[in-house]
Amino acid sequence: MKPYVYVARKMPESIIQMLEEQCDVSMWEKEDEPVPREVLEKEIKKADGLFCTITEEIDQDLIDKAENLKIIATMAVGYNNINVQAAARREIMVANTPGILSDTTADLTFGLLMATARRIPEGVDSIRNGEWKTWAPFHLIGQDIHGATLGIIGMGRIGEALARRAKGFDMKVLYHNRNRKHETEINLGVRYAELEQLLAESDFVCLMTPYTQETFHLIGKEELKKMKNSAVFINTSRGGTVDEEALYEALKEKEIWAAGLDVFEDEPIGPDHPLLSLPNVVALPHIGSASERTRMRMAEMTARHILQSLSGERPDHLVGG
Ligand code: DGY
Image 1: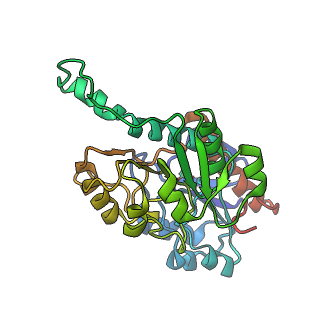
Image 2: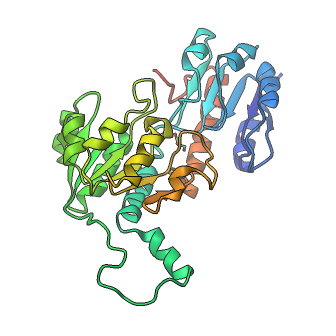
C-alpha cells in the first residue's frame, strides 16, 4: 500500500503528480480558503505525510490526533505555526524551505522600503483619485534611501540578502543579531550594533527575525521611542514581532515617520485595521516570497521533503537539525 499524503493548500498539478508517483494524495481544493480545522483533524489522523503552509495551525492537539504521521513539511521558511517540540515527542519530522526564498523576500523588503520612503502608493492613489492639480515643490516629499543608514535586526539569510541590496544604494548597514557574525561583517561591510544603538542611529529599521518566544513584541513602545522621528520601520518577518498598538501610536504621534508592513499579528487583516487608517503606513498582504519561480521552488522542495522522508531518506531541510 502506498503512503498517504494530505496537501492542506491547493497546489499546482505538477506538485501533486510529483507526490503521486509514490503516494496516495488528496488535497484541499479551495484556492482562497485555508482548510477548515475539522477537515485537517480528520486528515491528520490517517496521513503519513502532511504538506502544509503558514495558514495551518499545527499545534499539540492536532499532532496528538496523528496515528501514522512521519513528516510535517511546510512550504515556508518560518515555522512558528508548528509545535516542533510536540512533533519531536511523537518522532514526527518537521521540514521547511530555507534559502530558496531569501533573495525574493529581500527584493520585496527593499521594494517595500523604497515604496514607503518615497511614498509611492500615496503618489499612485493621488493620480487615480484626481488629486494631482499641479507640480508643487514640497508635494509628497519622502526620505532619501541612498547614503542612509539601514539597521537590520536579524542577520540570517534574508537579512544578508537585504544588506547586499542596500550596499548598491550606498547605504551604511548596521545589524543586530543573537550572535555576532564576523565573516558577514567582512564580506558585506556591515557593522554590528547593540539593539539600542541600531534603533537610535538607523534611518531605516528592518525587522528580519524569526518569530519565537524571545522575539514576541521585540519592537514595542520603548524601542519605537528610541528610533529617529524620521525613521522608516519595515517588517517582513512575522507580525507578532511587533506590538501593533505601540506602532500605531508611534506613527500617529509622529514618533517615527512611516512603516512598511508585509506581516500582521492576526492575518489576514481587514480594511478596518487601525494601522490602515494612517497615511504613513504601506501595507502588503504577506507576499515576501511570492514570485512565480520562488513559490514553485518552495512547493517542489516541500513535496521532495515528503518523498524523502517516506522513502526512508533524511529530508534536506529538517527544522532543528
Ligand atoms: C515564510 O516562508 O515563512 C513566508 O512568510 C511565507 O512564504
